[in-house]
Length: 217
Length: 125
Image (cartoon, each protein chain N blue to C red):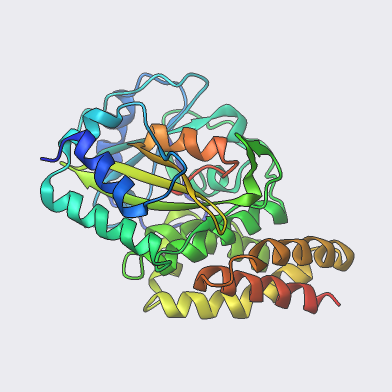
């Protein structure tokens, strides 16, 4: 069993043995447990990640176990780098260099905004990628699942998230990539939203993409 | 419980359009048969929200082809719900400023397949 804990966060000791039992029950070489189960007294479910080439379903030994399959081709993703940063693993985990693009980031923003507006009171789960990507491009820092939860808990409601996006993203993107690329990419994006301005989310994304492109002008 | 045909008919009557809306999903009939009357009412009221443009769509800038359209000509409305702790999702696809083309209903595995075909990246966790 390997414990990854680069930020020296306080693990709940009893959970380490439990984690080992769970990992032993998983018929895969590369699997790990990450998230609130390791760090919080009260937890809702146990996130067990299994890296596999096959799509074979694994039956968990406990109802609280939530199995998440990760394909070997996704080891370069920000998601994998985040969930595997602080975790308990069965074996040494395979690593691949991180690959993140502004297009990936914008895809996350594009989907998060309508989702937040639709599920105003249940935004916590839906903004994980949004905050993860924003913090990465803003501070070049990969948040682990625990840090990410802490960041999300700082928001009191969905309006604060929308304000945060409007305030941070134009700055973050403008410092991250070439201005000529920003102008071309974000004016094109704005064009896609232009035909759907009767929707609040599309209006928001239209104005946001314009604001990013203007920052590069 | 609502029957799957009744469920389809109700949604078809709500959107009232000439274009034939397709109901898709690997276990559509089975899942629809699990939907209670009260849950069905919630889904109908969500569909009404879509029609009244109160539900926010996801648009995708991809130029890839999807049936007779480019993906960037479409919008997707997503509705997650659960029955007995099993999560299901509806994905309702519309051509921008035009008619509805598909109503998907399935579990998360099916949902991931639909996402992939619409060029949406992997879902949240």
